[in-house]
Amino acid sequence: MTQLHTPDKCRSGTGLPDIAMPAALLFDCDGTLLLTGDLHFKAISDALLQQGARMTRDWYMALTGMGRDDLFARFRSKHPVALDLPRATSDSIAQTVLNAAAARENPTVVNLARKAHGRLPMAVVTNSEAPIAEAFLAATGLRHLFDLVITREDARDPKPAPDLYLTAAARLGVARQDCIVLEDSAEGLHAATACGMRGYDVRLPGWPMQADALIQTLASLPMR
Image (cartoon, helix red, strand yellow):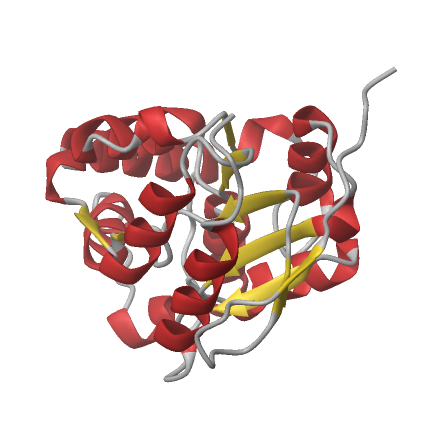
């Protein structure tokens, strides 16, 4: 039977907010760990253009937390165009992987991942497909920081369903309520809440202070 790790309470000792010691950190990829929004938009919009359809950037940005298949299905339902959805998905995945070198780190989130590396289990949990996530992490040199990469293929339903985060907790052998989730979308935060996990929105002005508090809390953990 997998042993579940549970957190202790810990004070940062710096005047920053007190944070309960997590058993694992779970990082969304796109927009959270890495800045890839423009890269994804270009690949997705190009895939649609190949079928004679045009997606505006504003429409895409309002739904950035949605999985690729669901995004294309939503687009088709809202626009009077005939789309080959499997082709749109495969074309956009191929284009994204081709341009993976354009991915950039989100500094405060990557700094947290580097500081936490080796102290507790960590996973990337993303609605993206495995070829995309692995290409991004390889291109940025971040893959070695994470015990697992959980992708769209690892669960039945993508975020905002809780499946991917539940899968990550189970495979890491930690209690789901003891995980901290880093996210940048309403869909991802909804998925974390549905699991009973603590979610942090890295888009908010207070995030850098929360990141500092997390780093101070984790500094008391020995290296694994």
